[in-house]
Image (cartoon, rainbow, N blue to C red):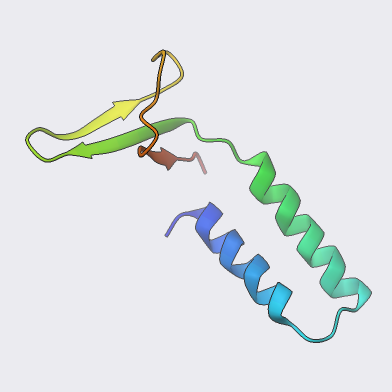
Length: 72
């Protein structure tokens, strides 16, 4: 599981919390900001015949179904 996926799950869990106190709202906003701030540094796509192909911003186009890869 990527950091982004983990942050997204945490945000969804906080959204389900019944009490919406100031601390919960601050945590939700911090998670939203962290999720939006993380941009992929590369992408990869699995092709059945040849395995993974990796892409970065030097490629003119990134396949729409490529998996984003993030730095730590």
